[in-house]
Length: 532
Image 1: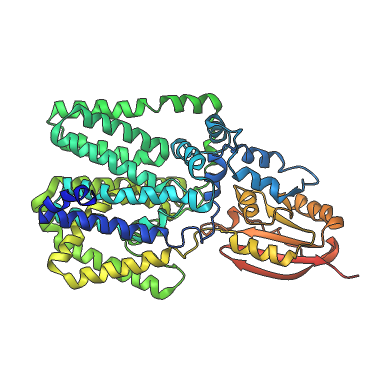
Image 2: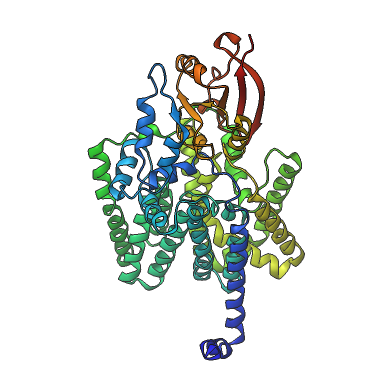
């Protein structure tokens, strides 16, 4: 019986069988890298948006805003916030929409998907991150198919290998955010666009319409990819009016699918001022630097604080540029139009974000996750690049693959952004089961993030200014024995999530400093009641 089921493998030509086994091996390798330490690393601040928005508890942001000026500040039990990160049978998809419209700036498709995913698989860290793992794995065969359409079989195999072991792809396959979903939707829209370009069929135009629309429903910056595709088609097919008209109709239709959400946004009064990436950083030198070196993260990703690894990344980038020049003539001679297509998908998002950075004084390019939008165009180019190395420079090929594997294996242990697991465990241990309060600055999802790993019986005091801070400490004095002051720091702008007033500089409030720690961009100061 089993032999009958696998008879097709025996009949399959050797070349196809080898290709199938290679792809299955890449999938297994990609799965191994993505499951490595999947639930062991702490959730970080942004991932908590997924938890409370997808569970329908988006109102928590409005609730925190409403208590931000109360005097004295409200004192909560930690378990009151922990409940808002769990599945709730009373919440439905409309609650997800309302939370996004009233208090967030993200489009809904990822949160809709996660709402149903969490209902099916639960709300553990492993279960919620597993969706990103599954999308990361799906992108491996998609990379193969897209690159085969663009270049050749060898480049397609190498593109699948690249996505399987790229530390950038692995890192975002382990995060409970929308970025691997963006990668899948982008590759699917690109695949249907390539089929439309070659076959001019209505089915392919419809496929592009659906996935382009879903991409924008997932992240507003996906419009950069859409614009790149629009730009490419408008320029390269300007003489083929039938194909261009069909593309324009498909493109317009994908935007029309956004009208229901756009109407919802307008009627509810969407507050786009909630976005936090414009940090008020003028200047151009750091922006140009980020524009040129950001793609090194696709190949290597290590702790940026280690100077040796910074040098290694720089050398790798130089090597990549050198070999890119070597293959330039070859790829131009054989695949000029497809090379331009890849370059358009790669460069347009980068240049668009660079323009926003200049105009808004923001730091989009410095924020690693936004490089996902250019990663789509890089994938087929990387496949062609690696196939050239395999044929001409095998030693360099194996060195690059080895470095990527080491980086991808280690990236699972790197903590990105303020992550409260370690400091929360320390607070739980230091409190020793005694009455203790945790004071935390009330911004973004910091209050929710800090509560997730804390003992549910601890007290939590969200504060938003120095007056609330000092009043909250006085309020807590009669019924707590220890006080923990928690400060989160944003790596691009430490003041974004912290205020200097968040410390006790005198004994007049009745508490004296005992000890402090700093881990994963969060510091904690432990205070005890001063002895008389």
